[in-house]
Structure formats: C-alpha cells, structure tokens
View 1: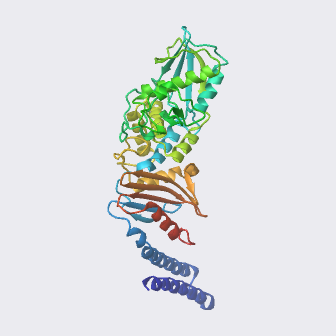
View 2: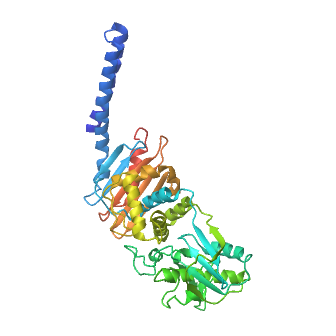
View 3: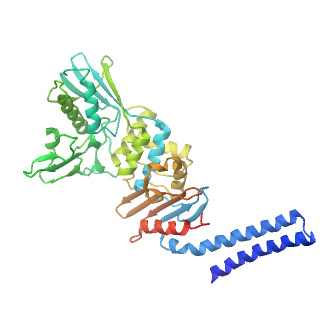
Length: 431
C-alpha cells in the first residue's frame, strides 16, 4: 500500500503540471519561466518519491547482506543504485585479477607480446633465456624447435637462463602443495609449470595430453600415491625451468637435432650469439582472456612479476610487481588504502572495497568482453574458503550495469543475489 500510495503521488504531481500547462494556454496566467519552474519542481519531487519507491523494493536484496558482506550496483554513468557496506575493505579473491590485467595493459601496452631468446656460445651450447612468458605450452615449444632445427644440427649442451626473474619468489597465500594454483613462478616455464598425467592399464605413468610427452624428468617427480591429475611437482623456479629445458631437448631431438641428455642452469653472456627470438603469438589481451577463462593464478602472478621487471628493471620480483600495481591504482585510478600483495587473489591479505572495485570496473569496461560471459552478464568470480566474490557487468540496451559482491556470511549465495539484481534492474525504467 505504501508503494502504491507513493506511485499515485507521482502521478498526481505530473497531473498538476498538465493542469498548469492548460492554464497557460487558456488564460496565459503563467509565462514559460514559471511553467518551467513548476515542471522542475515536480520532477524533483518525482525523483525523490521514485528513489523512495525503489528503496521500498530493494530491502529483499539488502536484507541478505550482513555486516561481513558488501554489495554495490551502479548504472552506466557510475550512479550508485544499490549499496551496502560498499566502503569497507574486503578480501576480493580472484576478482582481483581484473586489476592485475588493467595494470598489465597500462605498463606493458595492450599489444605487448612476451619473448623468449635462444643463443649459441663458442662451445656449441644452446642457451635459452626466458622473460616470463606464461603461455609457453607444448605446442609452442614444438613450433620453436622446428624453427631452431633449420638453424642448427646439434648442440653440445643446453643451458637455461632464468635470471630475468628472481630465483626466490614466494607468493603470499600459496603453499607447497601439488595443486596447479601453487605452481612456482619462473622466467622460463612450460605448461604453467604443471604436469598433466594419467596411468594406463598397466599403471604406468603416461601423459594425459597428446601434445606433451611424458619425459623422465617429469615422471620421476610423480609420487606413486598420485593416481592422475594436473599437478605441480616443482619445488622452485630452478626445477620448473629445468622441466622446460628437458621439453626443449625432447622436441629438438624429434626434429633431428643431436642433443645431450642433460640440462643445466647458466646465463647468457655478452659474447654469445643470438640465434632466434620467439615472439609470442598472444598479445597481453589474449593472455588476460585466458587468465579470466581459467582463473589461472600462475598466469596472474607471472604477469605481475614480469611487469615489475619491466617497470623497475630485472630481476623481476613479486615486490616490484605489486609496487607497480599499487602505483597504478593510486596515481591512475585514484584508489587509496587498498592492499595488493600478489596478483591472483589467492592471498587473504589483499584488500579493497566494493567502491574500489567499481572504479576498476569502470576503467576495465572497454575490455569487459575478455571476461567469462553467461547470458547477458560478463563477470569474474572469486572463491576462497568462506569467501564468495563476484564483479562484472550486466548488459542492457542503454549500457552496462556494474555490480560487485563481496560475501562472507555463511549460506548467502552469490549467484542467487546476481539473479535478484538482474530481476530488479532489467525491467524497463530500472536503469
């Protein structure tokens, strides 16, 4: 009844304007300025009543948002339509990856491509120097080695230079588990520093990917108790880089190049001869798309360390990368008081508010198609134990609506809340 009464009040206000207009025509009692003033007054009253009307409709959503939760919905102009606890700094989980991507676009350039260099020395060694490419996968290594086979017929030794990244990088929130999201970071990597394997009918360890061989260096690291999975079994960047090197050896051998059996660590020297530079087929925007599609923590922090080396000089460290992102957040986005300790969102030390995320979403809007899409929503999810987060865009004809959900209260369902937001705002006149 209260909502109906307020709706009738709005109608009565506009009826008043209409009657005033008739009097102008019939009696010329008002000039145009007076009529405009009356109209403006009634519009003002209507907006107040309409806002109150929507406030009456909003509580079913807001009642679900408790003290440990935050919600924010804004229209295409950035006007906030719905908010609660939106200024409180929360754990963003994987929605933080949106900020990581924005900072990478800013510092590296949207058309940036990672490179990997190949050198020969005077002893006939082949040297590989990595620069943090997170998408050096088996198919790419096959392509590279087929080109190298046209330039060399043998190498006396294979030396890996991973000095572009610090050898001691510890990601806050990550552990030493075999989970792929705990994979170590390295300047030279292969297949996200993971091994995807299974066991055949004889319980032998075999590759779960036709494009990736099961080389001894990998199979020796797989524990008998692990049945099959994609796992990260490398304890540090050195082990991860050596795995990439052993894959290079395998594919060179497949292309007819005579190669040794071992791989060792070393550095490229000024007198070494550059043989080939591989430039990634993927621009940084493509990297971001894969980052969002798979919510890949390894990609996120590889990018953060690489942009740290780009901004402050090698060796890249997580500290340099996070410092660069925080500089961007403060000086370009105008965000203050946020905490960014790594780029994937795995750490509970990361902190930003729903309003901070709105600023990030506004800046990221031209790139929103890189996010996962479901129906008419582009979004990024985030999940940690006891934490649910969502951030993204609801597509409407006038333009996108922004939404942010940071949830910690047990039993509150983020997807249900998004459906409630869509139902509340997608009807005509809601946005």
